[in-house]
Amino acid sequence: MEQITLSILGREYRVACRPEERNELLACAHYVDQKMAAIRDGGKVLGADRIAVMTALQIAQELFGSKGGEGTELAEARRRLRDLISLADEILAPQEKLF
Image (tube, rainbow, N blue to C red; front, side, top):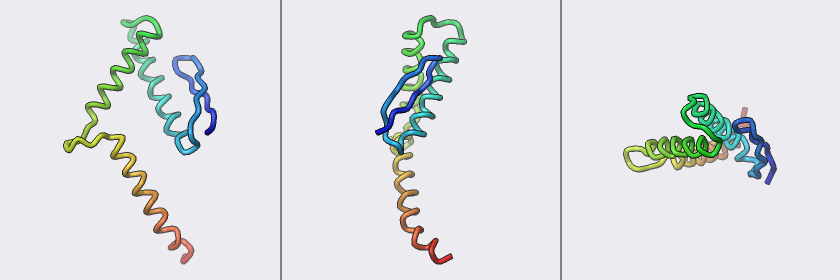
C-alpha cells in the first residue's frame, strides 16, 4: 500500500491505495473535485457537506444509469476489459522476443 494526497475543493486528503490503483484513484478524485466545484459554483447549494451529498447523489445516478442492456455495470465491464488486456499482454510477451 502507498499513501497519496488527493485535493478536493481545496482540501487535501491522504488515502492509502495499492500502486496499481493509484492512477484510477487520482482520476476519480479529480472527477469528484470537478463535480463538487460545479455544484458550488452554481451557487444554489451552500456548505461543503451539502455539496458533498449532492455530488454523491449525482455520481450515484450516473452509476445506476451506466448499466448496460444486459445489466452489466460499467465498472464490471472495465474490470473484464483490464483482465483481457492483461491476458493478451501475457500471451504476446514471448512474441516480442522474436522481433
